[in-house]
Length: 349
View 1 (spheres, rainbow, N blue to C red):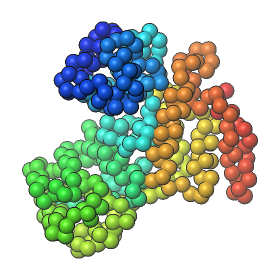
View 2 (spheres, helix red, strand yellow):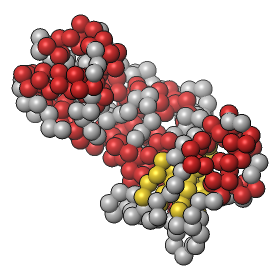
View 3 (cartoon, rainbow, N blue to C red):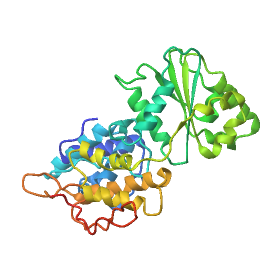
View 4 (cartoon, rainbow, N blue to C red):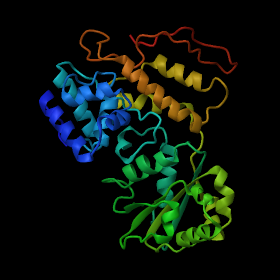
């Protein structure tokens, strides 16, 4: 919905949404992750969300179904700034610890190789019959993000290579009772490894349901590498494992894109020194594992974005580059392992 334009309107919208949900103020505070007194002040208009708590407030507004998608979050963030009477930088273009959703497609960078391979595997071309594609990677490596922000949000979008397919998200346990649409569809089964926890007869029903999907369907099954053996139990599914799409390690250039491109998209560049620092730290103990690094990297970048504040870095600018104001301890290594930089500033000139 459109954001409010005054403090009174904001209070009115918040109160109506809370009452419609049947929420107490305590539940609203728990959802926002802030103190009860803080939320009470928001709802009675005594004070507005501070810059530091804007993200928490927007999460609450989203949970109250006042905000839908990245664009509306930006509009609400700007509206809060207008109500405060001071400029507000756009919300951090990093998702933090959660996976990317279909609403985050514009901010999804760094997985172009896996995305291209997955799209190619899903394209029907001259093929007939059911298309089955397996996506494999470590837990937390980004399979869910690839399916949501990459495949559904990107490839199925307007002008995308898979435009026209109807997306259907199905839990593994729900496959036996799932009724596919009659039109060409893309069926997405994430976290297939969860089927291992079910009784054997239910597992068999899931495998049977996968094999029995209609000829006009394309099904993408995502599972962890540890569940590879489980998928091998069914010959019908196992024959697709040889051509699986792997969500694997990332190159340094891909990590740099993940760090820099979302901020560049929002008009606030990441300083080269901050990128160097993060890349160096990620490789400090060997090749970084995406499953471990990516959520933490995104969370750190959110903090850096918030810490950049709204203070101009020089006359004529509206906000500081991300990474300004702190000394760097990064020492990018040469092929011999020796450092090539010492105490580089995080602010670009």
